[in-house]
Image (cartoon, rainbow, N blue to C red; front, side, top):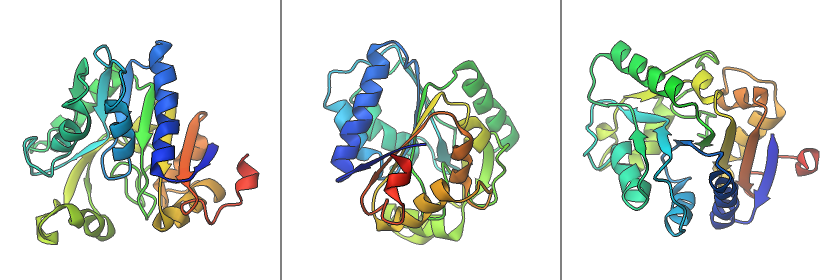
Length: 240
């Protein structure tokens, strides 16, 4: 893992943007794996403020809530249109269908999309419990797209986006850890003291399914961009 400690999310976004720009300009970004949540917003803002052209790029998102449609204000489809797709057109945008009740059918469909569109760069955030995508602690490192039950801590963390915690979906479709690991390059962003413990365990402790993000230790090209608070438990000199 390559560690970069930045001042704040704006500096982190600039660093991530430059990596993405270089890959795009050199023709090495044809499929872009995307994440939602508050962490990547600064990156998407930087991208949409630029003159980068994604009209020949396919995007594939990590996950989507089950039980709400693409036009729901809290769906990840809506989020992506608001923060990126509505300002930067892509060749095609793929997200799981949260209204598909047949989980086996939807997971197979999404696995096929990923197989047909190998991801060049995958953007990730990390949960306080070490989840990536919606792969919660205990998720198999061999998992592909799955219907997952969200943990109480994730539901609580996501409730800030809803009027009440009761409205937060309890299930989601999520790209599996094995699917994420197929990306040629992974860029993980983390900001704030609440992420410090997960970042420490991800980088310093042995890989374990109890901390899904620790699987990234087994990937050949992971870039970790964190602010000083998120890096506060690390011995940064070990990763320079």
